[in-house]
Amino acid sequence: MSQTCIAAYPAVLKDLHEFYESLRKEGILFCYSGPTTQTLMESIGDMLKQRMAVEEAGMSITRTIFAIFIEQMQNILHYSAEVMPAAESRMGEEMRHGVVVVGREREAGERFFVLCGNYVERAKARMLADALDRMRGLNRDELKALYREQRRGDPFSEDSKGAGLGFLEMARKASRPLDYCISEITDRLAFFSVKAVG
Amino acid sequence: MSDLVIKPTKSTPAVEFLAAEGRLLIQGESYPEHAVKFYEPVLQWIREYLASMAAPLRLTMDIVYFNSSSSKILMNLFDLLEEAAAGGRDVRVVWRHHEENESAQECGEEFREETRHMRFELQPYGDRV
Image (tube, each protein chain N blue to C red):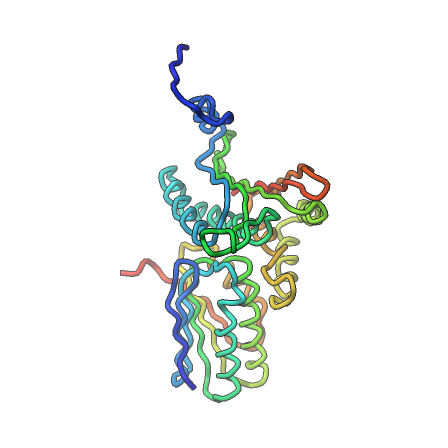
């Protein structure tokens, strides 16, 4: 293969063709990485619906993936430990960073998935992992019971943004248990990611 | 008592509460960044209505999609109505959903399972002409 390049690309994109092909091979429909806001999430949500229409996905699976996407993105919006304070943000609001990947598995079934990652405190990562481990052992009825129990918690309490319930919502919508991964990066921070398959 | 009317946005539903008629409508999608902040005036209005009016209350819910934090606060809203119904108030909730939106139907069923005293009915509809 001959290649002619006149370009100063970032190292990760040295070979854009290779990047393009690996996205395709892994079934990646799109990804977004960087600061997030509610407005941005709403726009990406539109793109998600359109992209799934191109894939000829039905209404039911599109609704499922959209719901998982919203829970994943709002986790970044509320809990990412990588924060740009409102004073420094040109959007005039606080912006938390993370990455979201929407794709379609290459294996039989070609299921859609939403993979999301962001920095969190290491202690928090362990807490989330414990919660997800517990959920992985539950069947549909047990997940429903736990969801109903947690929904009855006080929304005005300190953790008012609904932590925990979001993961339960995803676990209930997903066709198999949620996968997660924790990479410990510094003494304080870990990179935490969750994959939900629709 | 004045009406409560909130225009819909992409991530928040339309709210139309008409005090004189005791008719309440919440319609659209609900996944705001801060669900508590959005629904606080909604719950407040219902509390005031229940305290100051004796007329029946009919709430129509037509929510295509809501996120987990909206779900939590909607539970609070239904608890409020349930309490009033237990105290003898005439409260009725109609949960509307598209006949092919199974997710919205299940959500309605799960809220209904949480209630005992008020009337809570599911009302499927087909494509709007």
